Length: 283
Image (cartoon, rainbow, N blue to C red; front, side, top):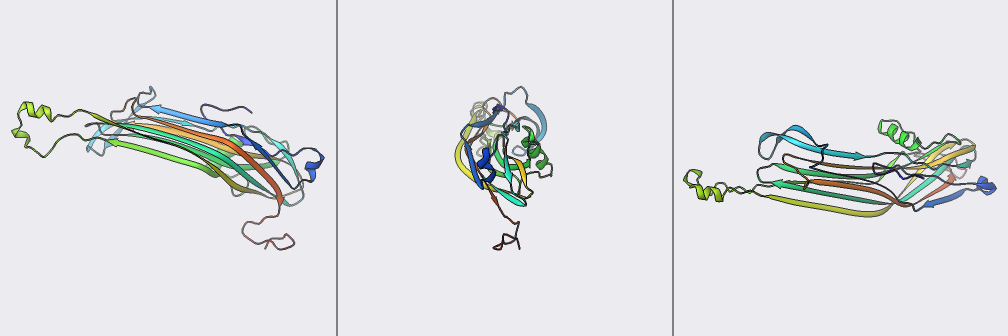
């Protein structure tokens, strides 16, 4: 399976059931340890930065603001296998994965230069697709996520969920001027020069977190037959910097990585909100 970098990746892993024993199996599992990763970075010296009209709320003056932004994701990858299901049954699919998010923001504030801001964001979503055998495709995951973002849910119930997400925003404002201590009219030129402070302050914040996550999905009321089972992961990353006087010292970096993961599936009876009686019928 190809790795989609550096822009984005949607990694998909499916349940593999083959041979005569697979046709009668009620439970199966598969795992993968390959790492899928995306990352993105940007800084104030990027040639793609643009000037935007804005209002500096700190100084109370209207000034142009420089904005630089980059977004990564998604691109689809898929591994598809087949599973046989008995008539009018549900599939319970458990998806577990270890997720690593790295966000770094650095902002530089200059005296009299307004506020500079750096933003880094990483997100990993997961969902499952169950479709008639032979209809699965590599682009199915990305198409399903795009449709979901547009209001159409093709995923197994209850739909895709966010496994991990972090948005980190850092802003720096510097005010080094000395005011109010001495009447400006009484200052001589030498003292006025001493109080004319020029300088900047740079602040950086980095976070690197790793955790395992799990969620169960259900494909309901399946008729007897063979189905393609796909587990989809949607990885996105965003980096932005903005400010009146930003340079390479104002930067942002984001990485989202999908680590070891396992998918389990079993044939069950399920209801949306009711209770199953002993016969397996929902109330």
